Amino acid sequence: MKRQQRFGLKQHGAALLLAMVIVALITTVASGMVWLQTRAVQVEAAERARAQAAWILSGALDWARLILKEDGREARQRGQQRDSLDEPWATPLAEARLSTFLAADKDNNTDSGPEAFISGAIVDAQSRFNLRGLVDPAGKHLPLQVAALQRLADLAGAPGDTAERIADGLARAQGGSADETAPASRPLRPGQLSDLAWLGIDAATLARLEPWVELLPLPTPVNANTAPREVLLAAIDGIDLGTAERLVLVRQRKPFESLADIEAQLAGVKVEGSRIGVSSSWFLVSGRLRLEERVLEERSLLQRDGDRVTVRRRERHSFTAAAP
Image (cartoon, rainbow, N blue to C red; front, side, top):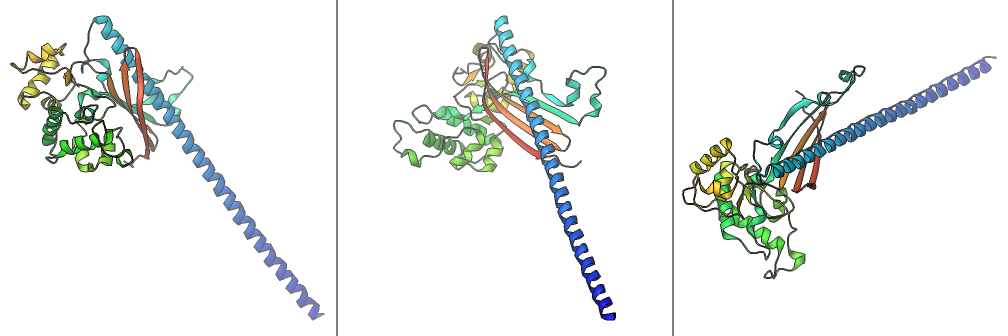
């Protein structure tokens, strides 16, 4: 009898142990399933937020294109051939809550949605010195343009051989009839300013030049109505920084309508239409959307040709906003 009781106790203990193992296994599996489900929800929410942010920024870009198109149309109606900083496109949009731009009826409470803030700006790309004009189609240096860039590099505190190095790199990448370099050994042709790193231009030099230079698909003149004084000093031979500052002050009162208006302020200094102008066809559009803790930034290059405004370059960056 005692032996049977001991045997029964052993069976009961084994059954209890087995039950505990099964419960632990079920708990582990259930926990894993809950974690996977939670992770899937988080991924879906993040993807939805990214898609919504991208959609909103795409709408903002379309709005910028419309502004530039209407500005060009109105300028033609007025008989103007200039672009200046007193026009609507030049007014930046400070960070504002997105709901203030959305039409909502009395039954729609926009305060119940997520916190979304948008900001942006349109910048005249021709207010900057275009590095594409450093070499001609044959890949040869244009000495006046190289000297102009070096004046700008000196103001920026960049090395004394910056202009020559950039011109040499662009000439190698572009090639030409006189270029004996094998195509396979040529550097890639840069498409934007950051790509100059392919030509051996260090990040510190690019950071110093970035506020004043741009790399556009085609050579363009500098717009004297939008360029800062440093760029004007570089683009106009024979003037000093004080004269460049005076040009900026004069255009604030009345924008330049022609090259003759610019020359009238320069006491005999002539300007070249291929290097200086009063209108623009290329614009940089930047947008920033902050949706709760996520931030999406977009930067686009637009070309305006008559009534057509074409997106020529577009890039996005997504990151998490730092805690205040």
